[in-house]
Structures are given as C-alpha cells and as structure tokens.
Amino acid sequence: MLPLPVMPTTTEVEPEMVLLMEHLADSPVTAQDIRTWTRRDPKLSRVLQFLQQGWPSQGDPELVSYSDKRLELSTYEGCIMWGARIVVPEPGREAVLCELHEGHPGITRMKALARMYVWWPGISADIEKSVRLCTACQEVQSTPPVAPLNPWKWPTRPWARLHLDFAGPFLGKTFLIMIDAHSKWIEAVCTSTTSSSVVIEELRSVFARFGLPETIVTDNGSGFTSQEFETFLKNNGIKHTTSAPYQLEYFQFDAFCNSISPVEASFLKGCFGITSSAFSSGVQAKLISLLSRFGSRDVPTPTTLL
Image 1 (spheres, rainbow, N blue to C red):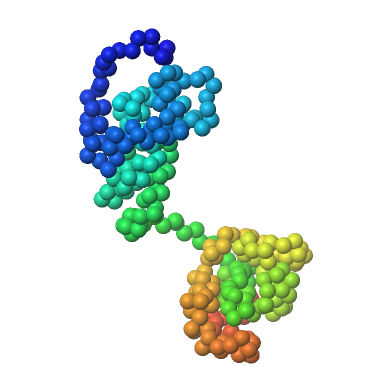
Image 2: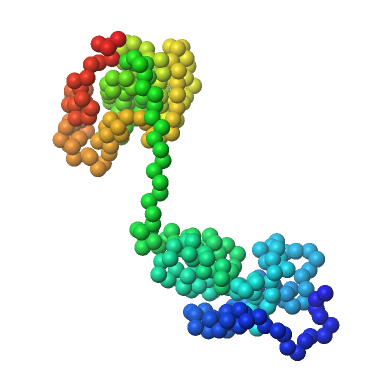
C-alpha cells in the first residue's frame, strides 16, 4: 500500500525508460519541460501526488482519464509515465504533434509513433484534427471509394413515374422541374415560391395535358412533404416516394439545375435577359429555348407514346 513505510535509496530503471528520457533531451520538448509543466498543471500535479501517496477512495470526475489507468501509471524523475510512454502536459502537446507530423506521414503512422513515446487524453483525436487541417496532407490523401450506383428500375410505359425537384432561385424565380422516367421528357415551370399550393396548381395543369402518373419521386423538401401535398396525391391515387436531395436518377435533372446556378449565370442572362423585368417577359418561350439545350426535345411526348 502507498505510501511506502521506507523509501528505497535507489530504484531499478528499465532500459527503455532511460532511452526515452535521452530521446527527450534532443526533442523540441525536453524532460525538464515535462517536469516543470507537470508540477504546474492543476490536473497532472494531483495525479503525480496520487501516484506518490496513493489514490483516494472516491475518484474525481476531472481525473477519470488518469484514474482508469492508475494501475498502469508511474513516475520517473518528476514525469508521469503510462507504461513506456510519457504523459505530455498541455503546453507541450502542440510541439509534440508537430514532431509527429514531420514529413506528413499520415494519421496511421502518426498514431503508431505516438504509441511508442507519448500519451495524453484525446491524443488520437488531436492527431486526426492536425492532419485534417494540413493542406499538404489533404492534397495527397487517397480518393475515397465511389459509392456504387443504385439506378431506378426503368418503367415499362410512359408517364408511369415522374421525378420532381426545384431549381434556383435565379433572378428571384424558381423552377419546378418534372422528368418522365420512361421518355425522359422534361417539363419546367417558372414559380415564385416552393410552397405546396403552387406545386399542386402546376401539377394540375400538367396532369390535365398528360394524365395522372402512378408514382411521383421527390426529395424531402417542405413543398413535397406537407399534408396538403400528400392529400392531393392520395385523392388522385398517386404513390409518393421520397429520396435524399441531389440523388435523383437522371443526368438531365442535374444539368438543368446546374444551369441556373451562379456559375452558369452568364448563359441564362443571355437567354432570359439581364434584368428581372426582361426575365419576366415571355418566360415560357425562353424556357423552351433553355430546355432544348438539355436533353433532346425531339423525343416523343408522353401523350404520343400512350
């Protein structure tokens, strides 16, 4: 039991401990720095005292990271050791991370080096953070594997499944885009809002021309998930399927949505006019011109294929 009744005059030191202390003499953080910081640190100074005089029966929540390892902790020349690894106080951790990061070895190699020499609570998270913040490491990291595609089943007849989404805003306007999964026919309507009432009104007009689909696929936007929209689909016998945003099936959808992003604004300004007033004039005719740029407009309409 601690403390010992009689303190030994000498203590046998393992060879690897001596090797570690000699290595510290040549590193950015010296053994003297570790001793000084340990005495001044409010947590480590208490841990050092407990290691020399015994741990209290009731643990301190602030020291749980150390008390969980109390049977593996020891002291040597005023420094706290966890096995053969030295516990680095907070003032020296940034310098140690820079030393481990020398040469940009990556997260795995940095953690392997740390396991040989140093430790502190949360060292793994600190290593990962230092690598994420390093521009050089991010530039050379391996590209993550591409997720396998999971395409929708191709419907056997036209106007059976519609994919809907909003694109914009551009010059204060938003576009409701609809794509027939069978014929790839694109319908685009200019709207002022993305509310359910507007969506329902535009769908009524489209359904009056092409008929009712069996299924509608949308993301989880508020305009597609309201009770009003669900009631409208239920009353018309249409099944509603939702998917995550930006996961729609057809490249024409992404191409059209990207076309009205700020990056492609120069094209649209030439198509719709520079000002909002010019944009509002003849918008449906200009939409037809824009749609002809994406996806062939010479494909048969859903009505001709029925």
